Length: 241
Length: 211
Image 1 (cartoon, one colour):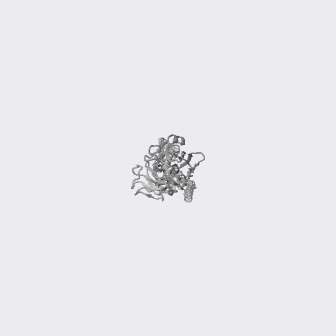
Image 2 (image 1 turned 45 degrees about the vertical axis):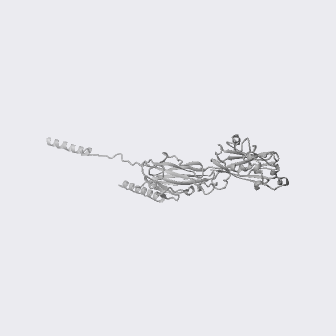
Image 3 (image 1 turned 120 degrees about the horizontal axis):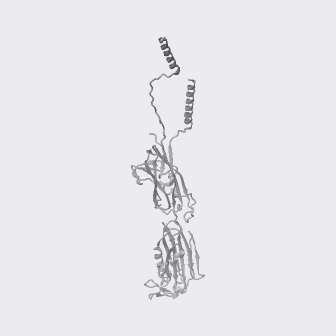
C-alpha cells in the first residue's frame, strides 16, 4: 500500500512538470514539412552599340577622331581639291547580349560657305542656295556584316553607287536613312561596317539626268564652282531590341 | 478399527490439500495483444523530391518578354496538412557589365520593373489560371480566386507569407505552384536595368491539419 502511494505521487509530479514546461515554453510539437524553391532568377539582357570611325584621304588633309562607346567620332577633310578622294568608315558592333536592329538617321547638309572671286564668276554657282558639293562630289556607300571588322569588310556590298561609278552626294541621306540591319548579340554577326567613298573628279562635272557620274550625259562645270563649299554628314546610329 | 482407519485417511487427505494448495477450480483466459500507436507522416515533396528546386529562370530578358514556370507540390505523407507559402531572399543585382547606358550606380532595378503573378493550380492543373478554382497570391499577402491574374513588381513580393493557402491537403493530393512573369514595355526608352538581375526564393510549409 505504501509503495503504490509513492508511485502515484511520482507519476503526478512528472505529469505536472511536463505540463508546466509546455505551458511556459509554448513548445507544443506538431508535424510539419518544408520544401523550398530557390534560385528563381530573372536577369536582363544588354543592348550596347559600340562605334568607331576611321578614314582615309590625302595625307595631311584630314583628321580622324575615332570616338568610341558613347563618344562621338568623325573625320574632317579640309582643303579638298579636284582629283582628290577619300573615305569614312564607321564600324558598329553590338556588344550586348541581346540581338538588335540597327537603324540610321542622318542629316546631310551642304553650304556655299562664302563666295570668293573665282567662284563668283562661275555660271550657275550655288545652285539651290546650298553650294555645289551636293551635285559635283561623287559618293558611294558600302556595307558589310560579319562577326568582326575583317569579316564584315570581306562582305562589303554597295548600297549606293557601284564599283564602277559614283553617284551625287545629294542621294546619300536617303540611302543612309533606309538602313535597317539586324545585328546578332556579341559573338555572332554583331558587326556592321559602313564605308563612304567620295571623289571629286579632276574635271569637275555634274552627274546629269541618269544620276551617275562617268556617263555621257555628265555636265561639264567650271571647277571653281565648288571652291570653299562644304558638306557635313551627321549620323545617329540606334540599336533597338 | 476400520472406522478409525478410514477417519485417519480422510484427515490425512484434508491436511495434504491444505498444505499443498492444489485445490482445482474453473478458469478461462482471453488476451489483448499488439496494441500500438503509429504516428502519421506529413511529407511534402516538390517536383517529386525533397531537395530545393528552381521554379523559373530566364536570362537575357528584355522589355516585352514574358515567361512562366511551375513546380509540383504533393503531399506524400499519410496525414492531411495545410499549405503555407512564403517568399524569401529577394535580391536585386546591379549589372556588372558597365554597359554604355547603365552605370546608374543603383542596386539593381529589374525587380522594380519586372512583374510576376503567382498562383496555385488546384483545378485542372493545366498550368493555366482558371478563375474560380485556382488560387492567386497577391503581393499584399492576400489571395484571390476570381478575375484575371494579378501581376505586381517582383520587389513588392518581398517578405510575404500566405498562410493556409490550401487546407486539408490530403495524402497524394497534387497541386501546381505557378509563376508567370513579364517585363513590360515602358512608355519610353529605359536602359536603367540593362544587365540587372533579380532573384527570389519560395518556401512551402505543410502543417498538420486538425479537423
